[in-house]
Amino acid sequence: MCEVAERVENGVGIVRFDSPAQIEAAAREDKLQFGLDGTGIVQEFIPARGGHITRVETLGYKYLYGIKVFTAGDTFDLCPMDICKTTDGAKIETACVVEGPKTGLRVEGYRPLDDVIAEVERIFSAAKVEVGGVEYIIDDRDGQLYYYDINALSNFVSDGPRVVGFNPFERLVDYLVQEAR
Image (cartoon, rainbow, N blue to C red; front, side, top):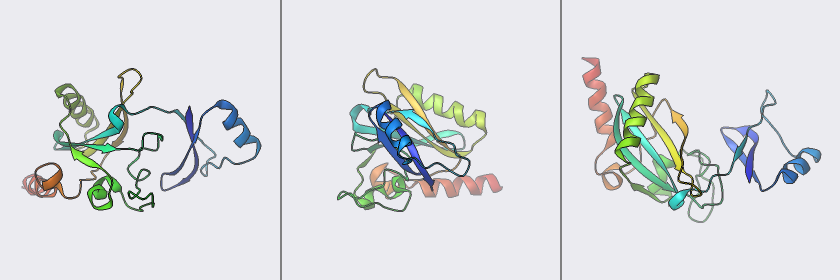
């Protein structure tokens, strides 16, 4: 199983194909549309262990919090912009990980294993990204962890006090004030 980005409009347009024959048929029928440069990406479908992906937010190169974002389980369009749907399937045009609790997307606070936190901190330190987030998925077939989206800015979860136990925006403001001094 794999998916192909069919069109590039704000990161949306991922289409799933369950066989190479399906991709070939779509190409023959001219149903694949790529970006301005004509580039497409083919990626393997990874079934998410536990039915969720995990997002880890950092501040000052350090772990701030983690959340689990639960998926339908049958798609690989796990970019926060692409999985945004209400519980009745209506598409939401916002970065839904931040709006998840408001839109019906199931999001819960989660602390990743210490090894994962250390890896995420190394990623952001090496990249010199002071505030950011990374998403990862654990392949349900073999337990392999894959980091698949590294962001040089943050999508703080809405209703932080309820979901992660504190307001991440307050911590960001405190950090910025300290950096400005």
